Image 1 (cartoon, rainbow, N blue to C red):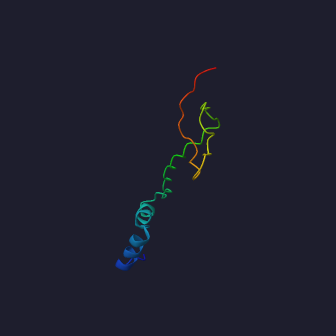
Image 2 (image 1 turned 90 degrees about the horizontal axis):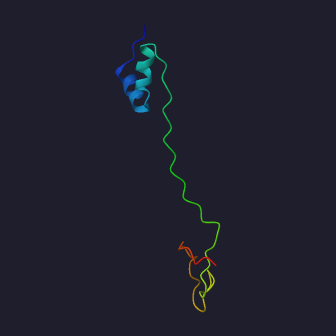
Length: 79
């Protein structure tokens, strides 16, 4: 029988294959590692616009730089 040397064991350990090597020695098949759960996706922007009577339209301004899009989600009065 061909026994592994200390260098062989060190190389298996460095590659991360030492556990699989020991499993094959006892006759068990190594299993594939489980995948990490995916990160939750960012919430999608709303597909509706809440009217704000008397306000400038979203994304516009009288003068100066353009403001960022409105992010308030308050319900307006029901007509």
